[in-house]
Length: 132
Image 1 (tube, rainbow, N blue to C red):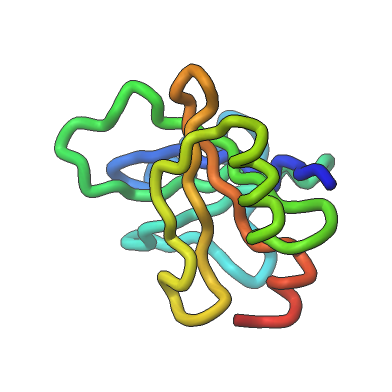
Image 2: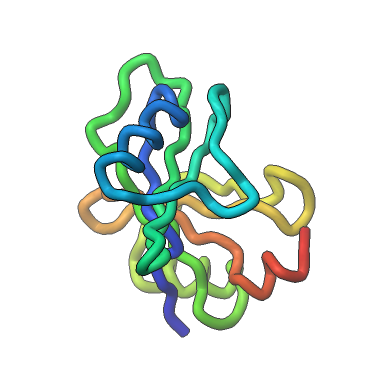
């Protein structure tokens, strides 16, 4: 079992303004049916050619950390929790457990690689399609 990069996440102060800036620079677009609006705390944009996604998330930190970009990984097969166990076995350090944050069956787990770079393990696409 392995994972793939679901999207790249950027921690920021104003998700809408920053997503609009990057959209203009890269030629990316809003997710169909989910337009970004002023005041949204999370704004995702997509490359219309490749489907690569960038998610801008507002964080409450007064000073943003130096490491503001991280990967969100989605299991290719199996479940999020199975992938969490595999990632731990490979030597990652668990930083935060956000499972269940939005109700049963939701959330993710935050890890750090051996150099301290953070990444998240999300639910598999099958788990997302099945609902919370």
